[in-house]
Image (cartoon, rainbow, N blue to C red):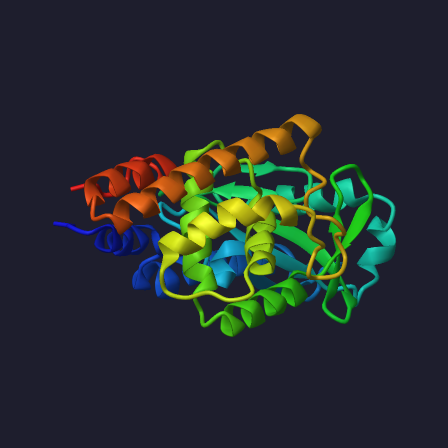
Length: 290
């Protein structure tokens, strides 16, 4: 039974954080299954051998939240047999070739999403497999969804995030997980990578009072929405937001800032019931109020 607002926050954070089993077994097993399938489909004798898989996104940063939905994997193909020259002007054929070959090894539903092959598992959840060619220096050629290519450096971006998390006393990732719960409860206005980068950019310092941290983020984030890809390749990460989408996000941040402020004021005067009621609106119906 939770009593104080701080106790409710601790319980909620525990409930949305991936379990030790999920981190040590479930996620690695999903990655291993993709590695096995793509190695079978594209062996060393293939014109484009599968080289390796790199776990990416929230699962690699430790910011994924329960219930687990998607896991992101970079599927790196070798150019040792000249495959790049075949697909340099036709990334659609490249991604469909990966999709078609992968589909032959699994009974799960497989689809193509422009830049990734999405594999749905019968037991639930999916893996987004982003097939790429390595350019060098941790930079990769990724299909852009229209037949061309774009450059991406997700491992560089990950290293930047890890350093930010370390510099902030490892408080950044717990705050990001809480922010993802807010984002999921309020129409997912933020894309995950954008939200992580905005949070890492917004804070110059962080302590263990995550209620105060959330209020500050909601108040400060509007000034940090236009952030550059820390991998150095993607430019402004907010460009997916339309004019109306940006306004809806700003409205959601303003509403959250107001409720977070009132929740912290209620906690300050000892009214934990009101504080928890307000945080439940902010973070979703799973937030404990009793």
